[in-house]
Length: 429
Ligand code: IMP
Image (cartoon, rainbow, N blue to C red):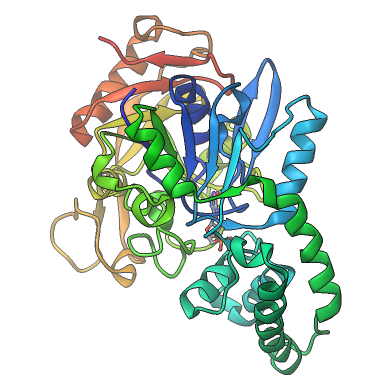
């Protein structure tokens, strides 16, 4: 298998976990390079549902090396909880199967607290974060005040750096937010213990992945969140704090992105978003509710109801272009089976402007007032969950896939028709 990048082409929750689990069969390494426990990658194996947050989605296969790269914001407590849950379900993860970068930044208790407190202060401008401390951790990384996994493992360094960081954060928590500070001694003891458990998994993962690639091993890079939540290219400020696409691989995995040969975007056949921010093709009416119910569109990490709407070809083309996608995976096609007609957003109308906009606007203020222009495609109104070959799909469903494919200009390589591992249809003619 060539080196492969799989990224979300919408606002996250596209069903990447299942696709990564599926394609991980052919990979030797599965590498996360950004995000943290804000991600929730759902994989269903033999009727058992697994929600992976920090651990890469290759963990459900034996013999794969799963890597948490330096660009991931690692909450060690969340990681241990996940490892304990996996162990309880019969999946023991030892350091030969999970590697954690010494250069990854650590999420501490104070990051989670500040995440929640900052949201309170933002008022109407709140982002609707997952509350996992992601933004504050990346902010400290950029401010050069963060602690990396390697710092955690050296007691003297941990003491010096955590003391400095916590003194500043406590001042903020007390003076600005009027909340109780964290106890430094307690934090040092707590994270000292964390370091002992984490240590066996830690290494120079960039070097490990590059060396494996030179030995001919196949590498799959697992993106979290989605292109429209990218810190630079998404709907800023309603975004996450990392580079969610293929360009994050260089910085977040220590692997040259120019060596990635195959780039697969993942999109649902409709669209969802959690948290605040613009969503031009959102349906706040009955159809949106139907999508939420049929598609079980509730956050896998936070349980929040997702905002639902129709596929947005303007945003999708932008996401695919931006990431140099060579192919697309279309997920949750089965959810659309309940509709007689399926609207798809093909352009945006801008008030006061003649002619529709078919290119994604560069600035958020230009996006907020746009109105979606929909084209309605015929539905198929039958259960497609059992289809395993493209020819087994009803004609209207095949036409829908082909029609989308023509409008995005790259092949749709796989279509997913249900949550289970095997519920996929290769897109052959
Ligand atoms: P944060 O990443 O927790 O800071 O949240 C920032 C924004 O990204 C919020 O709108 C979240 O709802 C959204 N977000 C973060 N992670 C995910 C995800 O895995 N799926 C969907 N949305 C996410």
